[in-house]
Length: 514
Image 1 (cartoon, rainbow, N blue to C red):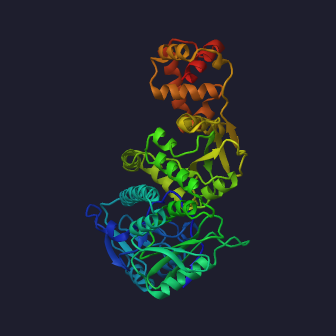
Image 2: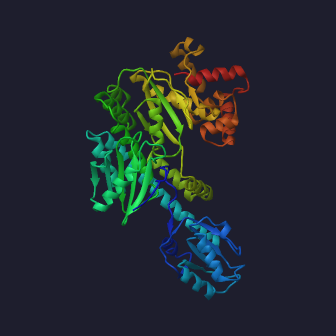
Image 3: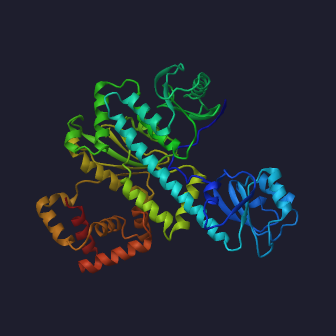
């Protein structure tokens, strides 16, 4: 068995493209001259350097026309040393055919060699790889989204731990086990694995723990199986073990969701009240009405916290919840799968192909993405800034008013990110509270009637950030020119001078009216 730290869970990176899928594109006319045809391609690079070694990261399809090819054997040796996945050689304008010495060198070193015909430009090959990569990423995003929904549904069932393990094993196509601190299996789901794989999983779980320097996760292999173990909670309790036939890019993201859920479900000293509260929060996230979920919660008052940040590991959320003293924590709901997939498809296959895939490549290299979570705390629990996180904190609210508190925390988080403040609290009351709410709401509706919701949200953020274009763009995740265009449109529709402080004040009160 070999072991290594498991990579952090994050939004799944763009999966590699099988060389066979590229060869199957008849419009390209590529021909395999040497080496295997089933290697994975992570990206494409074109170089006419005599020695491309310093410019390769590994995993590339390297394309060249052989402009400076003088020693084919040495060239192939350097390409293999750099870790390139395959070599594509374009015939014309330098060569009429692929040099025989190059074919022999690639065959000798097991490097796949492709012939690119004269009619096929290198950019067409690169575009084909990016499109295949975008399609693979879209498939992986769909798989991860469906798995997250399945795990959340399982966590709300009467026997949540076996249900979560079963959902995880089904989604990963393998076995999921809950290992007690002494290494024994306390629960398991999925197909059986050989005894040696079970022993290897116990050994992996044994290297985890709360002691200094101990990893929170580890991965390894046993025969043809890929193994991974994850510490739950603070690391001094049970561990999650997973055995699968393969390791796809999104598997660690899916396992990370299961880790968070199982950490909550197996936390020590979980009384009946805690189980009820956790179940209520899960039901809220799955779309239950606030009144229905509030009936299962203590009356409160409660504080809602929205947070974004962390180190990209599947345990960052659990660590934040532990530091704030609550077990009521869940990732913020993802966009509707249809909208998310439609947006991804548009970005990946439309005009922004290069930019979208550039961002995907950056995610692949960094391997970490900020977590977006929301937490529920008793109002008596103090909320202080946490390293690596932006926090937005609501005003105290009863169980029936949690939806409004949730919106307060979301607005506070946007302000925290825009101002680069570690913690921002909702500021209730003030002069606005002296105005009759019904009269204020009626005036606000009449005043803001010409504006649609995107324009209102932009105006609200812009006013809250004192008219800063850049900070508003960051808060809304749009380009600063988009902010300028929307504010100009607001001024036109309202027929108001937005540079007038009295106008700004009136609009601000109107936008905050219930």
